[in-house]
Length: 233
Ligand SMILES: Nc1ncnc2c1ncn2[C@@H]1O[C@H](COP(=O)(O)OP(=O)(O)OP(=O)(O)O)[C@@H](O)[C@H]1O
Ligand SMILES: [Mg+2]
Image 1 (cartoon, rainbow, N blue to C red):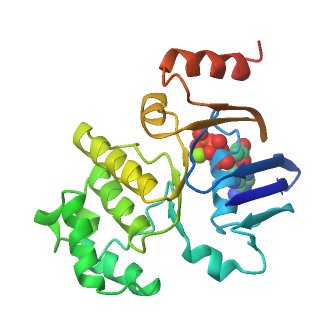
Image 2 (cartoon, rainbow, N blue to C red):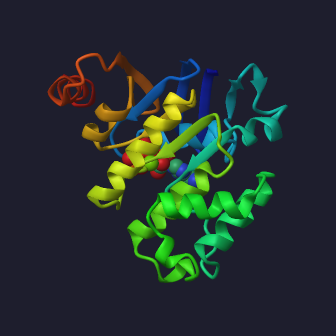
């Protein structure tokens, strides 16, 4: 489903990614772990077509990201550090705007359903500029999935969410997994990763240093593997 070969990203004289080779099958749920500044968001942004790699290739469903970027992007739901929402618009207006961009049918109905699903029906008509961080994150999640993407690229999706919203987000992830979506999630929250992901990839200094299956679903196992790699012991 997603294949990368030798992804390198340099900015100025800084080498941010040093050859990332990834192979992710359809329906896999993958957590990307790693310390601050390791290059995790950079990998996700390249896969989502937000920025370009300096060299290497990305294929999604056999399509080349560079050549078929429009078709590839339609398959992807991207949740970044930045919400991409328009401050002066309400949740309904924001979702309708993004829904129309993706050609979503019955967009108003779909937008209202999502607002309901993320628990913000009461705020449907308030501009999002007045929203708390967690409320923004809830709408950003709705925005990312409005076009029912086959691939979810989520960068720290649990950040800022309360317990109820964490459960709600995990339910969304698990439901989309059951429907066959492929999910790549950058996170520092090992507990949430264990609950929703089948595979863990650890990135350090722009390289993949470990790739393991979440067989035991045990936080101590993952933490131990992570510390081994990240502390360089
Ligand atoms: N536009 C940019 N210009 C210069 N350096 C950049 C740029 N974007 C990222 N970097 C650098 O690339 C490295 C990797 O950044 P990235 O955002 O991918 O890290 P990350 O693994 O997502 O970290 P975090 O866990 O803190 O979110 C960092 O050293 C960062 O300073
Ligand atoms: Mg990041």
